[in-house]
Image 1 (cartoon, one colour):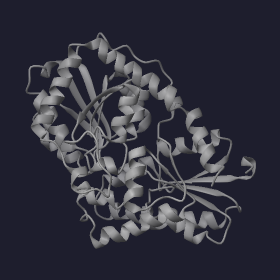
Image 2: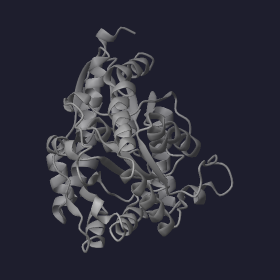
Image 3: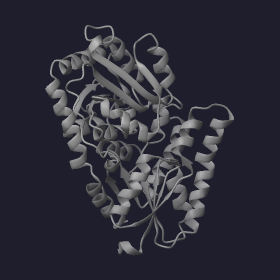
Image 4: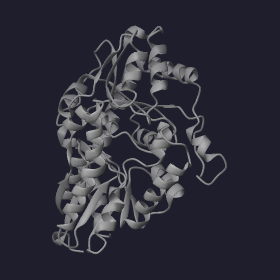
Length: 400
């Protein structure tokens, strides 16, 4: 198929950094690309922190106006166009597929977050309830009816397809980050007195807030409390819980800031703290991880070793993993007790002690910290850069 004759539209309800990077990646593969979104990042963060009618307005824009906007654009798009539609909003890919069925238009499902699994892990709905199965039918349709599905990791692909059905075509392409936005040399922080640990971005129900809180408390009551500094730039469902739980500790906690300011701030941080609950590891992969590595931070991840996040850190030798799952590997979805095993967590105190021990080792070995920071900085540039991702997208879009 001649790329020059193809028009590609990328769609997401919110215009955020990783969405624009996706658009740039596809452009770099040689396609003409038009991004479609309805809500800016600034507007989303402002409305997400609000309550009452403003939050309702955000939901209306995401779940009603945005899908209608996509359909309108699709009906007016040239024949043989390709729409790469993210799972924000989760039913948008199949909705577009249905309405554009009479046209020679392809729909590629970009799966960032898996539903209904995300709602089950958050406790909003029960596992395998009627509501869960109803939403699962939409996910099944997304996978089976869309012309292709792109996943963020191998485990996420395996879990989604085993539970909800196999894709017509599937690929794994990591989300990465726009490295051109981190156009600076890695800062030498070997002479700084304290090791600064930073958490940036969402802290929602898919993240392991309880383990973070327990671990930070343990460290700040230990013999290394004066050698470690924690700061959090957070938003999301558990941000207030974190702030209240650590209110009596010397921890900096502020709301998430605009991306350009965040990229400037992280120049002075050593370690990026990221987390996924065991259940959350079956739903998503924190995009901020790539940004932290691009900014020169090593990664300290509280997550399952079997997760795609754990695999990323191991493959780049870019940091440390505190395994919050009692398992190193997880079985097949169809195996006995899979549903309970995937959500099972380690004892919080046991995990906090391991977190403390890890930090104490880092304090005593600054050269290892710098080695991990260098691995992260170079690894994301060598293995997750624009050229590599563009080749993967070229393969997907020329074969749908």
